[in-house]
Length: 248
Image 1 (spheres, rainbow, N blue to C red):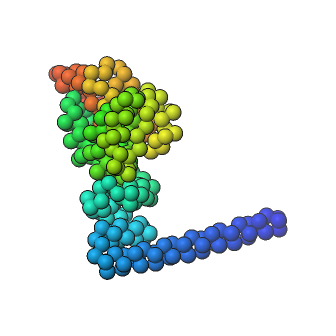
Image 2: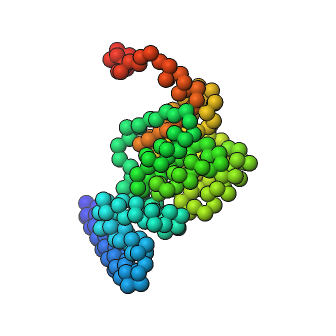
Image 3: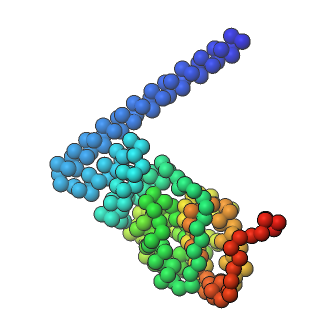
């Protein structure tokens, strides 16, 4: 019994020291960013001051201020390494809440890019399935903390790389989207999934890929571009609102 008490006492002491060290590191980080903020304001570096203020909000646990600061930083420094790093910190600090997936279906590329522009929230991570030439990727990068862009064609991926090479918050992955389990190792998180694997891809394949990625990542938003699926759904005369209880 005494042996167990000694172990428990030692564990409590170790935990207390760890918490003390953590508080000390946090205080040191807070003091550092206060100095950075002062230097930035003194030198007229408005963007640098915004970055420092957002870091301070992160340290203080002020989610509203941190996300608002990140949004302002992203507007001022859209392709800067500081924006990408800060976005990932915010994303890790406050993971997306509520995993009721809102699914959107479009047929046109223009409508797809419009949703890429309007749906992301500060701090979120996007997974793009079918990067093609990187046009939608660039749009996503403006509103997301980070974008994993997947393209299976090596030649298309090369073009996409040229389109996003100035962006620090995009990682281009050359892989087949039909292997989501393997892809998860390279793209561990996705708050939003934008799927455009070809507007004329057969409906069963479009649905199967969307279903598997939705189940694997449980994103807040799933956007699908499919001409055939959109045409089919748009032509329905009616759709049942709820599944009958005996069929659930």
